Image (cartoon, rainbow, N blue to C red; front, top):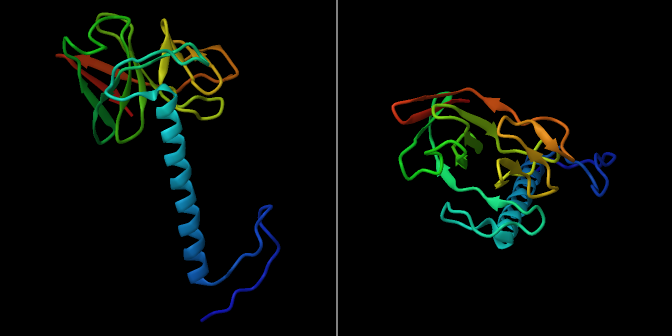
Length: 179
């Protein structure tokens, strides 16, 4: 079995680096296990703090005074996400907003007119928190309260950069988002 050699730490708290393939695999496994555990912990905390399930709004977040967005699912094919907008959809009429989940990532979608929609990344530009709520006609980050317009512009910080916008098309009740 190859022997590991000690080298100066790459990060504070690291004791040594190894050149052994087995040690490298172990290190990757431990890193990924820690990332998974952190993600589960954050997901549980978010649900416990009012994330809710079932796609419908629940009570406002006490920190940001935002109401959770309804959650919809869109199909992804190639570089496009598609979503059927029916009468019962939260996006059925102008002013409607939703968090749209796709296999390519989550999007904030707003219906801004009879045939007009905007689709934005659901990741806050301040510290990459998932945006899941709204207040009036604004999207609100639950972590630090940044607010964005339905076009993605920062209305108040701490965020300073707008959300990324994706092109949309709407025809025959189907919304297509170019990813």
